[in-house]
Image 1 (cartoon, protein in one colour):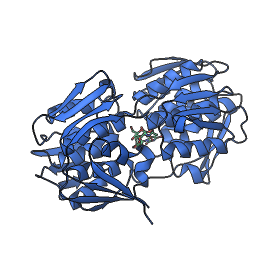
Image 2 (image 1 turned 30 degrees about the horizontal axis):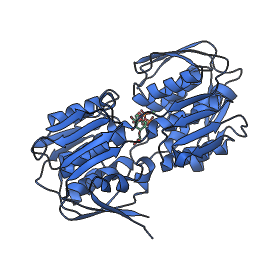
Image 3 (image 1 turned 45 degrees about the vertical axis):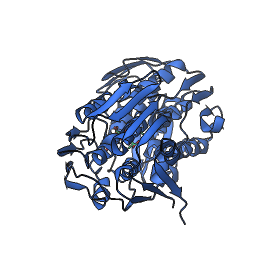
Length: 422
Ligand code: EPZ
């Protein structure tokens, strides 16, 4: 397993190109199942999660052609061979469950393994199931697989979500495009990745209104056609790299960054004494004067503070002036980066879903272990600010969601390298 070695103390200077959003691509790719016509995605990120989704779709008979070093993906499901998403693939990546809605909508059946828990929580699928049953699907759990069928196809319905689940909203949105009649999703998730999915489905011929608000209305159509769609910028990668100069000092311009994608995050940075400036090409970030100031953070559904930036923010607050309180409201176990940061000299107390961070002057480099995708990048960022060398092991977590992180950071002056593991 590879490790990444970071030597702290070098200020950063330069530009980082932000890639297409992992969490948009992972719902756009299964959308190909809704049409026998080809779907072309541009600005696609080059990540191991994309390779996992590709393998899953290919196991269903979807043709996936990758071009321009993975930045363009052409998908076609005109020759499907299966509607079963196997546990071996689904257990590696929860987003595999996003084939459920499209398979039901167009093939009227699906057998999808439950993803099982992961490091950050149990992550059940009850909201997905209840919503699709409201649209006429019969879904039964057998041997760890959801066996779903919709004889005669799905029908439009009012679908209130008990919680604004991103994945459930995506599954229902895709399913509703081919359902008979009108579907109204209430308490829908409002994340930019959902807006991006709606834009893509509309290009394919879907009739959708209200994406980005809590109520999305979809008029089912008989069939969807071909489309070409650019994957939206990755707001989580953007937020991650916006923090890099806050840790290390200097100034970084995130090319392709859009303030509307990270509004609540940018407001917290402003409160912490970080200058975020919109430029013609993206967002420029620098500390206003020395160490940032402590701020309190509570993760919420969009447009609130994103849970996927909580670990990175906690790492930054470890060396802020004062005490910060972070509340993780989305997942039940998303503080696993805390013990690793404590190994680097951070002063953090975790009580259930609340972490209290007492800022210290400086962290010290140490060997640390990545536990989940976002925790791993928070340790790399901490290494940029720490005295000495930090070795982050198990970086396969990192490769799931960040394109060549060591290349992007070394290009702006960071002393960082990947060491091949045994
Ligand atoms: C998406 O996961 C993202 N993944 C996650 O990003 C992100 O953290 C999450 O949304 C929240 O923003 C992708 O888009 C591929 P949810 P998803 O359904 O759809 C509970 C990353 O780092 N819940 O909004 O799985 C669930 O347990 C990943 O890129 C139910 O109880 O998130 C969780 O506590 C991590 N029942 C909460 O809701 C359900 O049926 C949020 O889940 C569904 C969800």
